Image 1 (cartoon, helix red, strand yellow):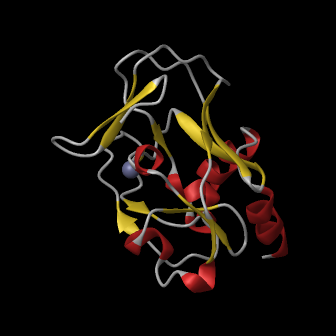
Image 2: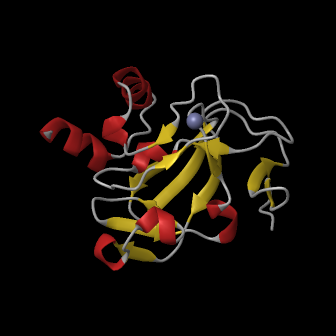
Amino acid sequence: MTSMRLELRTSPRQQVFATDKILEDEIILDIHGPLRLRHDLATPYLEDKHLQVGDYLYIELDELTNGINHSCDPNSAVIVDDVPHVFLAALRDIEVGEEIVYDYSVTMFNDPWEAPCTCGSTICRGKIQEFRHLPEAVRKRYIALTVVPKYVLDKMKGA
Ligand SMILES: [Zn+2]
């Protein structure tokens, strides 16, 4: 499965690669899909292919988007501009053949799902968890990059 600039490979494992050079701040992908409420999803990230985009709101991801892996040192970020306008943007230049990755934690709030991380980055946190559990320096970095969704920022202020 491919979009214009991305290719999903499923062997040896599911990964998405750039097939074209992508420049910093470019929108890589518009993320569309059916919206689902949290209470309809027993374990939103684990059971199905869902991305949190609001306090109680998730988008069901298509095969390509769901194939994009997590990294603690990501080259892209999901931007939740205004539901349902959600897109993936490049955080730096991405070369042809480079795997596309984003940090799953940035859009996660009040979601108990967590998983061990095997991204292999030198700054790997070892675990994928919701935003509020990230080290403060990492949270500040994402906030400075303006990629943290409003529903997460609002909750952090109230916390
Ligand atoms: Zn990691």
